[in-house]
Image 1 (cartoon, rainbow, N blue to C red):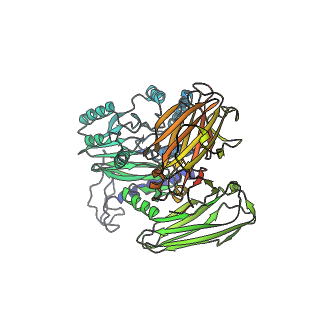
Image 2 (image 1 turned 90 degrees about the vertical axis):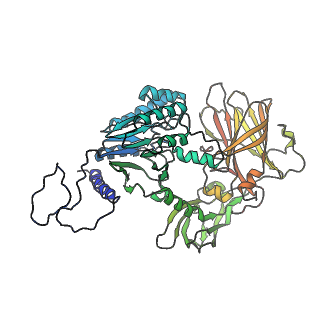
Image 3 (image 1 turned 60 degrees about the horizontal axis):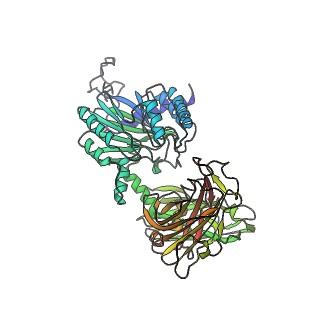
Length: 634
């Protein structure tokens, strides 16, 4: 027998022991006279006196069944994980397998690529020894072409079926994006009316629209999901809902029912473990008369279905939020290297129990490095702070480029009977410092660079590219200079583009992170306070909308002016955006600029990046740091 077979046979035995704990345990002698009816399929010897088996019933209800649910494979898939899960499912032998979408990477207009990805995925399914039910995710239905391919291969994007008295509903949350469309809603109403006698209803969709609907409403944004209408149709009916998309696991209680947001089966994840809801898993569902029992089969263990609930996740997130560890940045002038400096680490404990932190610095170059202290420890009583200054020095100045991988790796834990703990990797920002000078006098937005001093920032000689790599032929093809300035009311942005051929698709995209410097160092992803705005290379004067990752919208004033051999962009952004994000004290911001250049109509643009990485639209790593006042950790 292979080792993995032994493991999964052992997993199945554990699974049933976990499920049995869902019922109140009984204390009973190991041997006593049976009081439970014996299954008609089991013939036991007739014994006088004690017997060597327990008094529990045989779980042989003919309406009972087991299914597996697999979740997000893509969104930055990790090769091999999905196939490992397929092999595991084959060993577990469920009646059939459900999914919650994101089965291919998608996000392309290239139909040949989409067809090839589906062929690859169907090769995995061919190796599965039981039936698999497809549910569409945003990676599977990214654009009209992909909807067409789905319908040609799989037929309807939403459907239902019945099994042993249970009604299964597979919805499409991409109807369109983040929405249950009117036609689908009308179908659902009719489908539920026809299945009113089902003993239970299981609903599968990709995006957790209940959570997204709640967020829209909490931000004062129009709720396009139509999920409240779905819940109204389901209300009063025994049902359970399953979704994926976020790559984080949690159990919710809504509409008198239990909802599950599944983690990953190979999709992108930090895999920080169960407390974070980040793990690769297969959900195992046993359908009983009284409803479904679920556990999560991690590819290296088993987790009960209620191990991470909305409440426990909220408690853990409160711990992560209120036991705050921050590292102040070291920002140097562009021509400086680091020979000697001080890294300040602060613990702020807003919890009602003591917190301690232990950790170390990682990634500093070893060329003559001296660090004091080496072992880094902080502790704070409830409501208190602690701070530690770490001195670092080198035998010679170290270029900024060699300091970009520095991390503070820390374990944070509470004291008490049931401690919470988390392992953090906090970037230590050691980077260039750019000034955002004050403007005196009125400012006129006209797209004329004569109003500006010499522009301070340019693309490097060999800029980082995204998109087609052969689409940029050097500075004579497309080039960029830019700058920022400010007054009390506005941040001003100016960019001058040299472009030998202006065609549709040419544009500048400005990314701004307005949050406090410690927050944006700790949480680099595109979210609240992290904005994007595009300036197409078309003559324009008027308002534009800058949008954050949380859907926040800010109106800015802008001018795009066509020039001989290119175009200019000038914009004014309300300073209130920055001060509101930074507790009324605007001290800094981060910025990146993406120049998108198209040489022929219909081509995909090549992106040239000023500060950032190839994930420039998704996170702030590598963005430029601009100071309007000395930086402080908030």
